[in-house]
Image (cartoon, rainbow, N blue to C red; front, side, top):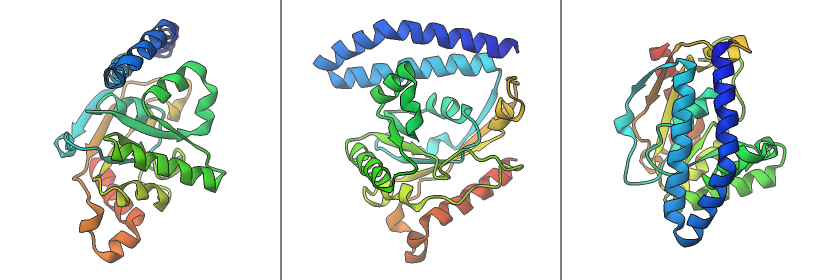
Length: 243
């Protein structure tokens, strides 16, 4: 439980210090939005690195060289833990907005950071609102901002992390409409950090593997038609390899 306590204390201090930082970031953004964007990104990444350190997670990263550094991408990840966001966001090379559930808007200081970082809030019960979120994500990519989405739509709770839920094909329109590459992000064992034994945090070994870029236009017509299924099958193979 000591790890839970240390992380809780750190997060409380971080969010309290965030209040004056928000004002500074807002002022910076008035003069140079790009500087504000990068500074917000690095602040949150450093905070996440502290959380990872306090959790005791031993992280193995494979294929990070597959992530293009000169263009935005669509990250597609499997999702079994809140730590998936912490672990992956700490490694994003550039501006990246995560697609989160709309309920996150109710958390005042956290949602403010998320808005600074171009995160999008998805209403999973409203089809029209969901389409609007995807269209906004497409605009972000066109403006050089990567997007990370978990196309299962919720955290997987099956007995095995190989039991991925069906991928929502709408998520992939972000790539098919912009031409940006899809980067599969396969995360093994993240639920063992916290979700498998709440409320304890356990230091475990987690593997993240970034797959090779997938360009929708280079796929066959059949693969393009069922692109969610295609990417899901690739990711299941990778998760099984790293299990």
